Image 1 (cartoon, rainbow, N blue to C red):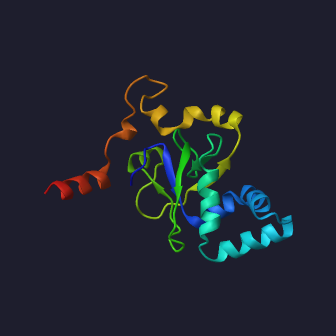
Image 2: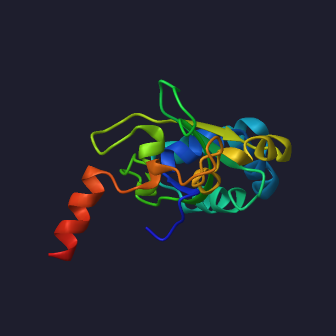
Length: 167
């Protein structure tokens, strides 16, 4: 996709769940309704794609203080937890997958067989600063050895894909 190794593209439903309190607060403000009515609007939007709610999510993720901690259990090594910026929210309601840059898969010991990754939303400047060292681009140079992090070398699946693309 058109995003960097520090970015993630979230599915609509995941965005709705992760951003729920902020979405409801925005609905209350924009529609001038109480919390109960705003929650109803949110609930209806969870059942099918809603352009209005997608626009709210798209505005919310522009905040420099909203990020995702992406984690693949078990958390065994540096890179098992990554700090990612939400690049965008998908509009295809049926697509329940997150999109990340292939280069960060080895950091998570992940591949293309349906690994489950945990998404943890953080939305405070302090936590974003605290986890800044977990951005994939900060891990290209191994912080322990000060050498190139070999996890960023193309692995088997990417190498096969490149070979197929070239031929």
